[in-house]
Length: 305
Image 1 (cartoon, helix red, strand yellow):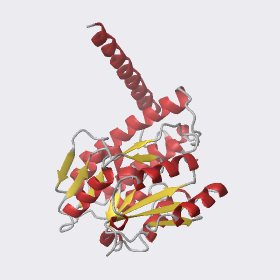
Image 2 (image 1 turned 90 degrees about the vertical axis):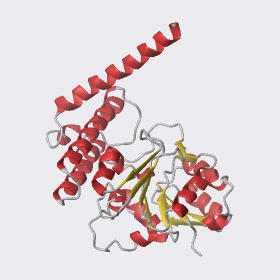
Image 3 (image 1 turned 180 degrees about the vertical axis):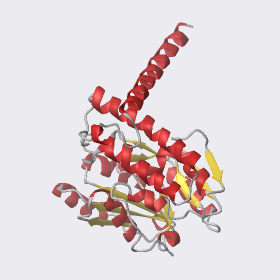
Image 4 (image 1 turned 135 degrees about the vertical axis):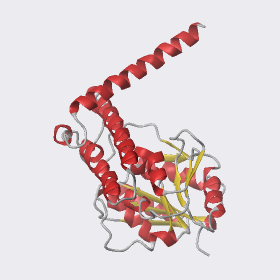
């Protein structure tokens, strides 16, 4: 029997992230035959490579592969190696919370018959669960989180139906996986918190053009869904507006506050005028700062009460 779930962990080989995540998975008190772990590494850290090989020898349900995949295409290498009934991406900084793997397994087992598209929201949305009847509602509910790898998973049987020649976006291949089934009768978003990120800055993340990715490429993916007739204009506008707010957040964090990061931040000017204007982003930053100040004032008032 194949494992119920394959936990696919693509990484660029950051030791202080990946091994605590793996330990948190294997501390879940779940029988090894119910799950497998796939780690694909496209980084250049030789020490990480050696440590992973030693770690894999201790766990018979862990597959490790060193790849030369380009950036996020490392995600696809993990899926290729997976044999579970359901294939779930795992963030290489996300520490599994106690009991969370059992919850995931239960969700998969409860939905074996009709195999809806399942997205694990990890607490980023308002409700505990969303049951949606069409792809348009699904995208409109997730908004910018359609591009969030942590939530994405796919049934092995659906993954195997994806044609070999299907176009795969270089910055967001996981979105192509999520969007592969657009005519399901049910789309399920489970929003319980299953992992929490290791407290760290973004100095060891990717080196891609951050503003081009989220102000142009991800919005273009949503636009193509509209052009293909798979989402409505209203849903596209909702998704686009959410990305606008996100780009404002990114500018505030990395340009204004100068928080450390490994991203390429040089593409902001070139990314403006395609979907968003600089004025829209600056207004978004002002709104963001105002909301932060309002929350602080509210807390002070509550303390004085």
